[in-house]
Image (cartoon, rainbow, N blue to C red):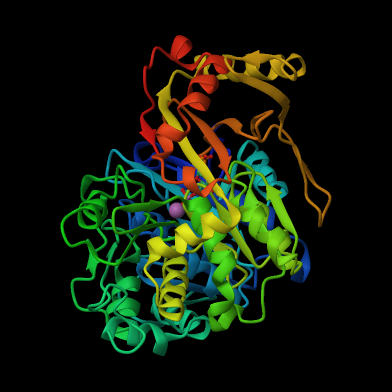
Length: 557
Ligand code: VG1
Ligand code: CO
């Protein structure tokens, strides 16, 4: 059957953000919207001769949210009409983001199309997203996403087939014109990779409460809240089946297209079942949650929230206890707004520490070049060179391996770390859905004020440096400008302001604040209390409450 050439006209809003193109389902379900974007990806990646996407393998999968099956059927037909040789699709259209990254790498695919809006709400009124990953398994770098956006503005036609839907639920291979379509088990390859990195025997004995286990005298217990999102099947297979954690360890383990109406965002506000378990009577020894597409993680001890920045630092300091990292780390990379706790570990280990802009795509080159082994973001993303995405369950398993190897309660491990290297008090305040013009004006005024800030006093704080973060990729030399306004004070504390690039309505202002506390006698404060002065200063510098009329942030993490 000959491909059908469908005439189309450009949409002017298909610019990928921090992590792919995220829009409301109502936007995505307009006629031609998905097709225009997918054809633009194929066009940009087509290359000439053998170096293009045609004739190659492409991986497709998503987090199972509303509109996932419909989008996949469109992509399958278009891939066949565009001459893609082979498609690897997770059964049911499911692949967590880190699992997709692994499948791309393992089967040497040319790239992958990941369907997710991650932590954003799902359902008919929620969000959908499409992200293109390259052959290294990681999100396409800016030069590719910019080219895709440019192409979406020029597109006049796309290629598809007039064929019935394929069956996404049955494992196996079928043929669609010249394209081989393989439906694969979404969990198997990923679970095998995790077994290769961690000491599953040691973790199993922790759960059995044998010689290694029983950090609180009894049997070690944990809860994992999958937030009705994609990690449910992965966590059930790995934690309950392979590691022998009792049934019921995984909460909300069935993926739902609307995530049960909740935000699949692992933070203390949205992961309420986890927080309830960890702060209630007789809490488990360890608690964790992941997000919509499985690339984030939230870590808790009994009545203890471990900030993602601290978690990155602690994982880096202890990674050698897991077989996959026994040889040590090459370097540690963190996004700019992430606290400097990881830098202290890098310095202690005598390895390089890197600071990149927000978004996992900026870690790709460092990982490919073997310069960084562990990477992390304050937004609950941690990962390593095993894939090219952040990886929620990987972080949970590395924690479990460390807990099993050290045989010490998590709270004790955290406090010991602070005593040795100091504590970086940290908080992020998000102001969601503020008026776009207000947010843009605030950022513009902040930018304009940067040259005159150093040396000035705001309350008791004296500004030491103020700039707009600009990143030069150490591997390919590419420059990314305007990646966040950072203001450092004479006492070493710091405020960062940036606008979110993943939202779909209004603007989200993120304000990141941190203060270093080396004195062990002062490390037990609540972080909002410890940072109260800096929070007030941050408001005064940017005029947040005055301009937005908000007296408090929408979300505090
Ligand atoms: C947010 C986070 C960023 C993360 C990105 C994608 O971006 O801050 O650290 O990489 O989401 O994460 P922004 O531009 O909204 O601040 V995920 O798990 O939503 O793919
Ligand atoms: Co995510």
